[in-house]
Length: 383
Image (cartoon, rainbow, N blue to C red; front, side, top):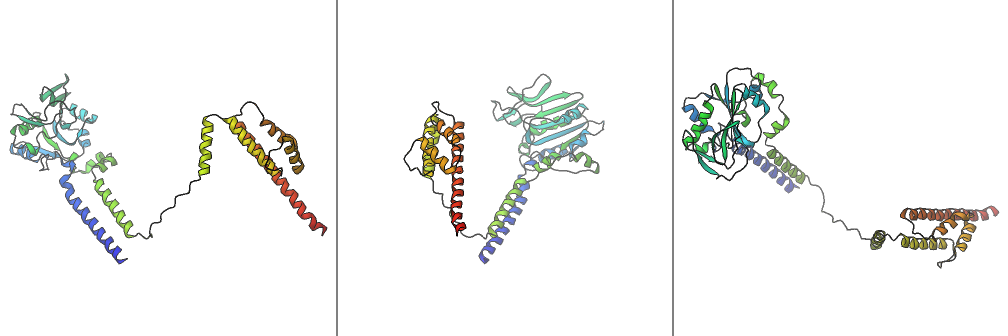
């Protein structure tokens, strides 16, 4: 018992220690940090944000819900850069309305079809070569303008919406930290965000960084549980919960040795009868079944009446049954007559016949018991 308790506490300690290590290491591998200006990893945008500040550009981090922008009544134009941490295909309709008010929205990480283009290419721009590491391209209709691309399609394209502009790119890593030694990438994105007039913001709210204001409570109240759970390390919590349950279950195990269950002995006779019945039914041999079953039931009735095991004529069976049960012979004669029908009966007829012959058996048995009880009582009365 002491040994089990020692192992239990040791396992619990290791579980807690592993959980703390996972929680400590989780931010380093947080997929939501991709594209964040707070991230120094290769897919982060910290170097580009510092580059913009060195260029003297006023740029700020947006850490409030998008609903605040959608519901804003500000007349001054805004440029918002969103580097999506995951591929996405559609843009919310509210963003189209917001862009139509004279704002600029730049989206990096739009999922598009994979083409035959090479994965790593150098695209020409006014600020030098831009390195693109993706084979995804976008075909540009008439209402869209390609800002960066090749013969396979556009990598960056622009759509005018009323007085605003929507700019999209197939790669989320356009100016990531991994490209800080390639001047063309940083300069190209800098031109995109500074072309329009007004303030420049980088969305950090979608990366999990929030700096909510009191008036944001109403805007965030509509957020669903799904959005909350999507940003929660549920896998880590689930693994820890399962491991803890296993440790507790093992530590409090009070069962004895396992007992091997005995396999039931198969009934070969029953299996044979079932298989034979299936074959006869498949062959539609109702007449043969009727003949065999009727003969067996009549022989059984004959034995019950005390007429032996050799089949006798039907008249003898009827007379014996009437004599022993004092019942009417009509019902039994009708049943015996049905066994001689020429046309093969159906399954329903056979079932009905069996029910009636069983009723004959029961009637004989009940009356036979009554007669025996009377015979047993008569000597007592005489004495």
